[in-house]
Length: 372
Image (cartoon, rainbow, N blue to C red; front, side, top):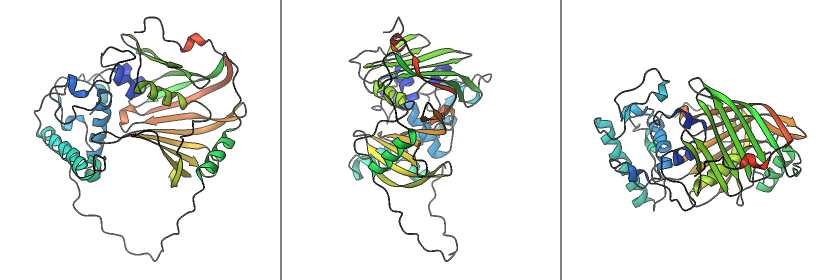
C-alpha cells in the first residue's frame, strides 16, 4: 500500500511526516491519533497509530510480493504522475476479494500472537508468505552433501571493545564552541527521478535542522532542545511525544559518534556491503530495538536498524553509512541511505561537502514564524 498523492511529504522521515500531515491539531498534550478514529471501514487495525498505518501496509505488500492494487481500488489514477504516486485510491472500498481475505489473515495473525505467544509479535505475514501470495507448504530439499563440516562458532568480542574500536576509528570528537556547528550539503535522491538539494546543520547534541529543496518546493524540519517542528504545504507544525523521539533519532545520524545504548550486546557476525560486521543489539524501550553493525576491519558503523513492534508486523527503518572520508581529523560518511521497506520511500543522500566548526545562528533551529 503506497500513500496518497502528497509529493512533498515524502521528502522527510515517513514516520514523522505521516503523523503531522494528518491534519490533527498539534500541541504538547496531543495524543497520537489512531487509524480507526478517521477510517471507519478499518476492521482489524483500528488501534494502530495513524502514523504507522501506511508504513505497516507497505510491509504487508512486501510480505506478499504485491502492490497496493492487489487489494485496493484505484478509481481515478493520474497517469501523468510517477507510478507510485498516481493517486486515485479509494481505500475504504471492499470490491476485491483479496482485501476481504487480507482482513481474515490479519485477524488470524493477531489472534495467534495474542493467544499463543502472550501478546508478543512472533508470527507475521512474512512468516508464512515470504514474498509470495501462496505460502509454501514444504521446505526446499537440501542440496547433495559436499563433504563439508559445520564451522565452529566465531568468538565474539565484548560490546565495550567493539564500541571502543568504533570511537577510535571515527577519531576524537572535540567539543564545538557555542555558536558553531557542522554543515552538511549535497543531493537527496529518491526512486522515480525524484531528487533535490539537501542541507543539514547539527550543533551540539540537541540542535538540528534539515532543508530539502526540490522543483515542488522547499521543506524543513528542526530540533531545538525539547522543541521539534516540521514545515508542510500548509504551514509549520510543532511535534510532540514520540515524534520528537523519532526526530532526535534522525538527527543522531549526522553526528560523528552515535549515542551508545545502555544495554548494548554483541550478538553475532554478519555481512554488509561485502564486509564482515559485528552485530550489536539493544532494547531501547518496551517495543523498540536498535541493532548496530560495526565493520570488523575498520571499526566504523556500517548500518543501524530500528525495529518497532506493532500488533501485526514490526516496523523497521534501516540506515546504511558508506564512503567515509576524513573531515578535520574525523571519519564521516558521505553517503547515507535510509529505507523502511517500501521502495518508494528509499532515500540516498550523497554529500558533496561537510564543514565543521562553522558559525551557526541559534535562531536557525527554532520554528519559523507561524508555528502552531
